[in-house]
Amino acid sequence: MHSQGNLSKLTIDAFARLFGTTVTDIDANCKELIDTMDFRYERLSGTERDKVILNILKKFDSADLVVSGDDRKPDWERGWAENLHDFIDSGYDVSKLVPKYFKKNVPVRLNREYVMPVDPDFVLNCTRVFRNWLFKKYLKDSGSIYEFGCGPATHLVFLASIYPDKKLYGLDWAKPSQEIIRLVAKHFGWRIEGRYFDFFTPDANLHLDENSAVYTFGALEQIGRNHEAFLQFLLKESPELCINVECISELYNQDYLPDYLAFKYHNRRNYLDGYLTRLRELETAGKIQILAIHYQQFGNMYDDSHSYVIWKPKKINSAY
Image (cartoon, rainbow, N blue to C red):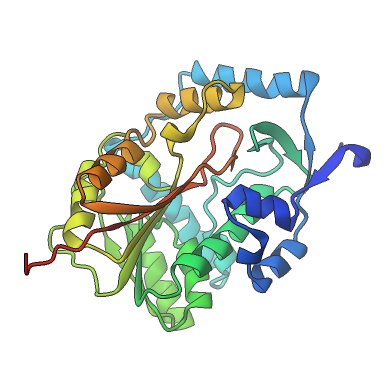
């Protein structure tokens, strides 16, 4: 039970700070979305905080803790197949496309603290608000938008609702993902297309449209240190903009206990490693321009999953 007197709330100002922006940068529609949801939470302290930390430490030693990598493809096939079946059985209810890794009624990380939300869908709703702000700010001028590692296409469905005139592509290595997108396009008439794509061995025959933007949203975590092939693909295709919303381990400050625990968990799971460091190397070499880097202090109990880096390849002028 929550003690009403001890509850805090994510306000518009708090969301702006969380996203690394200003209140004036959050549009009216996004503010209305915030007003429709319950963003109250209780900061955990004492014994309750200790329980969370103990849970995390025990997780490190768990024999069944799954490690990311290319051998996990069958797991994602099964996971997205479950979303596919739920979507069909519900009569094409797009809420059934939300990945099941959004856990309910569990503590979450917020501003280097552990908190217990009032609303079971706190993490999902925070993600919806963030997505609304991010996509409207950065993708409004793109003609085509590609999501790599799109899973059950929940972000693409949102994009289709706000940008019906843009061409959308969902790329994933799991076949159920492509079937979901086929059904979504057919049922709702959206300009969305699903394609096969493997981060570990990018398709050299895949070419991006002119004036295109690329984004990942919690997908690169699964490739560990094996991000060079994907980066070289992006450099070759040279989209106008690249957005990566990911757990970015370089941004944790390990002098804080919650950050240290998140970093350890990140490594234990073999999540995305060295990506931001590599982007900085590419910028130093004059191959890309980094437009924004932000450590978003928010995520599930174990790590902060919504940090972002926004960058673009530098165009090569053939005249020189």
